[in-house]
Image (tube, rainbow, N blue to C red; front, side, top):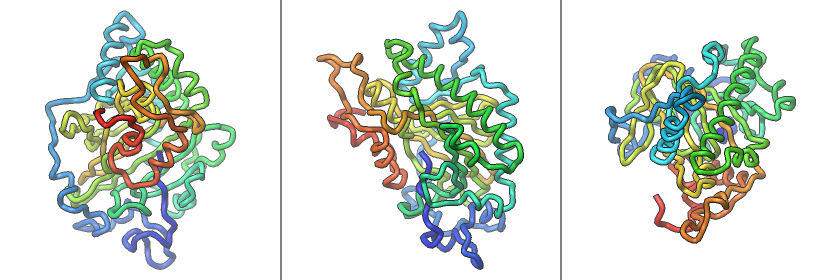
Length: 365
């Protein structure tokens, strides 16, 4: 879910350049050779990442999808099931997305952020209905402290209505982004067939839910931060939708909350990180988990590219009836997905509040 952006007049002074009152991106702040980040980014001491437990020995599961389509299918399915139940996160290798497609997406994303500010600001807007938008932080109108991040967000469907709104600079952007998002859509559909099978349901049960999926692509830039122990790139949250497929570079920063600890996800070249959203937790009646995760910043530049595959906004989120019986009552009340998104966007990032309020009882994890 993309952030809600402020009007320029509402931006803190540290986020606005002086003469023309244009929004200043974090990338531009970082280029000024500052020795400490502005106060608007500095978290209270008890909220800083340096106070959290970070475990390096445990890692999220890594699943070879080549097994799922071969003789190791039962093994791969077991691994996917366990990952969804225990972690809500896993990495996939041999996922079927061409390495050249991934490399081209990286190249054009870097070109986009390296363009002159004037070329990028044409996409800056506080209108969340715009199919493309450039922003910074997460939700500056709600946040008491800002996030050390710039992002570009684009809606990917219906394609004929939105592709002309995608950037025309760099020149190859539309072609590359189209090839990349089409490849990830295919992967998402395969993943949902596997999730259905993991739940003991027909492999097509998610097709009705995702027959007209909302699809979004986001480019995240976390510029070098001189004092990374004082702030976040993104605070702890779960994603509201279906699945997120994340491409991350070689710089560590993604952390997943697991059994009381923050686990730093070790990057694997050309692997894709999969995380389940709130909607999947509801559809599975809590068997599969959406999980809190966050992004640290670094003295080095970091980039990530998440792709969101979500239900259409008019879809009703509710546990699948085939998973319910007298011993397994529904754990979540029904809600239309667009209303769930409104709840998610109504606050700054604060964990799993958007799905927690759907709980019928208070004794769930």
